[in-house]
Image (tube, rainbow, N blue to C red):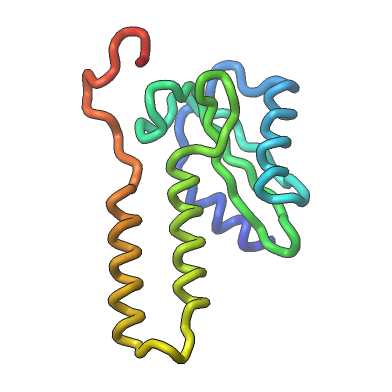
Length: 146
């Protein structure tokens, strides 16, 4: 459980939303976490608003959820986008990176030399870096949030 301290301590905090969280939102959050990490939810943090700008104009709030899936502690950030709690864009990008690194680590077979594997890994990581979520330029959204 010491790992939770380090995971939670590494998450940047934003201002809490005036109305923290409803029972219905807790049920939505539980459903989303269960889809990705079946296990036990240990903590649902206070709802933060506004969102990280990288989540887009449709995002109105975010929440961090700590859970235990199997024997592993996990931290998931959900964003309230267009009225629904969904995995955040940044969190999804981070998960793709984690899976890519695991895949690259697992692909160490005897058919290719180390230098070829390193170059292939560098290309894959560079492609992933090019898809990092970024904030939209100011004025990119109209008054309706489109």
